[in-house]
Amino acid sequence: MKIKIKKLREGAKLPTYEHHGDAGMDFYSRNTVHFLPSEQKCVYTGIAIEIPEGYVGLIWDKSSISFKFGLKVIGGVIDSGHEKEVFIFMINNSNKEVVLEKGQKVAQMIIQKFEICDNIEIGN
View 1 (cartoon, one colour):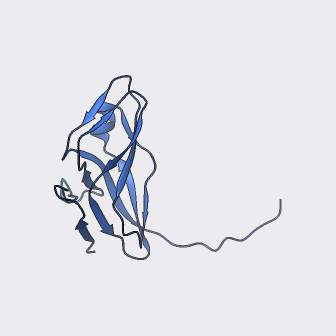
View 2 (cartoon, helix red, strand yellow):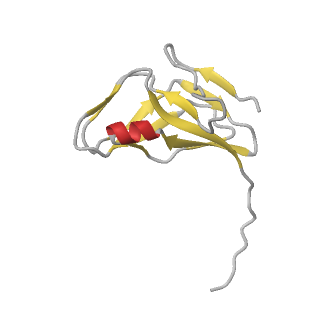
View 3 (cartoon, helix red, strand yellow):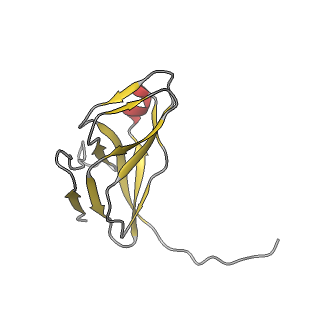
């Protein structure tokens, strides 16, 4: 499958797969971000991605970032038709200040096929 990806900002880094066969493509921070303990922030990627119809992009943690820094991705569903910048919402679960450097891997996206269900209401 081919995915269209666009750099929206100077200095943005295109997502990459670290190894052949990886499920998730790595996204990178567009700028340096400082997190205080327990602080939530939006990490900008400078990237727009065109998800094909019938698929969804799911944003997940990079285990190395979660383990090393205590940073956790907060949700992250990119629907087909989303044309704006991909943002990564994160929280610092550690008791220390954490700095993500510009160009650092911050999260991964898995492109997954899905089906729309017809909801049927049932009784108690």
